Image 1 (cartoon, rainbow, N blue to C red):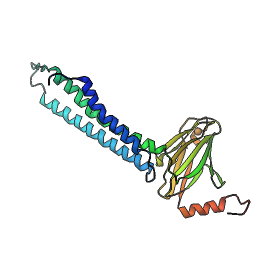
Image 2 (image 1 turned 180 degrees about the vertical axis):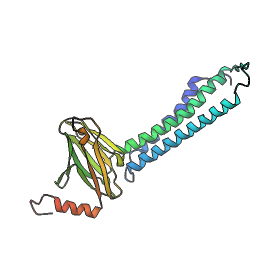
Image 3 (image 1 turned 30 degrees about the vertical axis):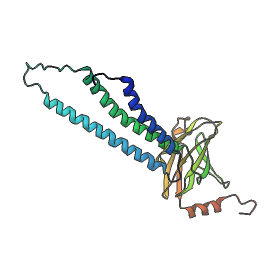
Image 4 (image 1 turned 30 degrees about the horizontal axis):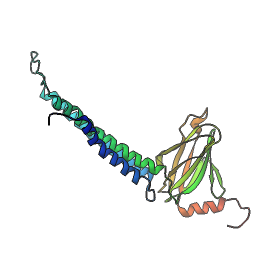
Length: 242
Ligand SMILES: [Cu+2]
């Protein structure tokens, strides 16, 4: 009982970590019902709760120790207890594993969300966003082009193909909790899920030149009907056939 086998301990703790990682990997791909901003918010809340719980625990322990071991007279010197190696290791390893377990759990949750974020749902509506100094040109599959204004239907995932005409830009849509770099010469992507009608900010978060700070636009979320009407009214007329 007295001997601590480090290899055995590591093995013991690494098995659940590997199993959790496999589970995260297996479940991460399904995005049919997934709403990214809700997923990220949930993870954020979990992190805040865990940090608060750990913080409160340590604060209470500190207050208790301050009161319990307060010096009663200037002559008090105290006598430190001599810990056995097992007890000393226990005091170090158990708290480390408890807090590390929480970190690993949150890290794996993060991985699950990230994997979903990189897996565009099949039914997504696709738009192309060309970034340039200093604005965004949005091109819809029906041939319409808009500047600094992305119109999308509510209740359907939106797949953004992201390009750059000149330097590196970053498309950030804070309300949808998504952000990705536009790298010249490549096609990048992100997806988000607008659930309610309304207006949201889209902005560049990579310093891209003197007018970087004015490189922002709007994401306008419309009802499915309004969006179809807008497409019909604005799509190029040549050919005539619908
Ligand atoms: Cu930019």
